[in-house]
Amino acid sequence: MSREGAEYALRARADERDRISGDLLDLESHTTYQLLKGASLRGATARRWTAAHESLATLWSLNDAYRAVLRDAEQIRASRGKLGAEQLAELTELLSGASVVLRAAAKPVEQRSLLPQSDERLTLDQTVARMDAAFRAVTSALNDIDAVWNAVLPRLDDADGVLRRIRELERELGEGGGLAEQETELRRIRVSVLEDPLGAAVEPDLDRLARLLATSRAELDLAITVKNEYARRREELIATLDRVRAAESEARLAHGTVVVKIALPPQAQPRSRVEALAGELDALDASAGTWVIRAKRLAALEGEALKAAGQAQATAKALYGLVGRRDELRGRLGACQVMAVRKGMAEDAAVSELFERARALLWSAPCDLTRAAAAVETYQGAIHGGKR
Image (cartoon, rainbow, N blue to C red):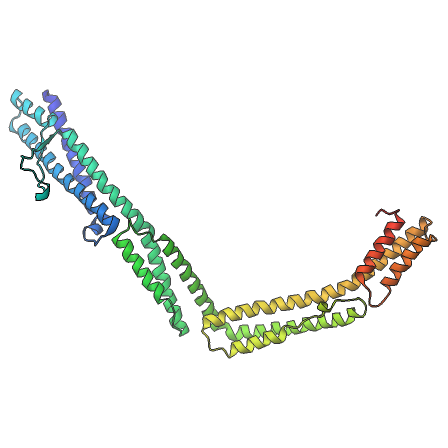
């Protein structure tokens, strides 16, 4: 090397050494690295971290040898103000030659040979490449473990938070819970993730537990609401049942009015649900079940009461609609008769017979709407020459 080349190479290597030292300090201060140093690992994670730890030991060994060569080079440079040929030759050998000596590692006796183990000699570039490979092996293991912890541990914390909130709600209700098994499972999952994150396939179990806890919390929130609002909601339910009674009474009245006018099948008779619903409310008042169960039953009863009121109102409307349908058919028959007169078909015996048949059906009591509608269709078709 020339003097300028040696000076430049020495400065570049010094910068490289400082950068590597900074990276190694960052590695040692990495949170996951610090956690793993004292962790009790097992399974796939223990095997991966053991291999990474061996790479780390190799990395430090290489770094020590690398720094020793640079110290020797810096001492040579500092020995003289102006480098001579001998010093330049020494620097050239240190900075460009195979100057890094990697001592043969001591092996367990079962892996030894009686032949001498030779040390390995590397250039500075080869040493840095080896250190980089070892560094990447360690950081790859850290990243993989960190990825699992970052994905799963916050979810476990959230599940624990939900479980604590469930316990608070249970105390507020004065009722014990039944999630001891799930609480134990959460602890098991946490231990598994901490000790073997790379081998712990816990996502399905965690998804199932999260759904179960969310459902339990929602039920308890509803139970608290029901407990606090039970008296008011009970009065509202009683008012709803009164509306059901009124709607069912209207449906029965409609049936009584319509059945004398329109032929109805037996199943058209309105059926009352209000007494059964009132009985369920009385049973709910006397229930000794938990507030979670009572909350579910009350919500279901409220829904059934609203549904019963709607069905009774729809039944009355449908029954009255049958009379409207009969009147609409009567109107169509009259309009068809006028058209028959205009077409000069009113005196036709066949057409007149069809008219009288339809008229008899529509003005009979009770009226068979199905037959009457068919008779009107037939009469209308005859007027239009068999076409509608």
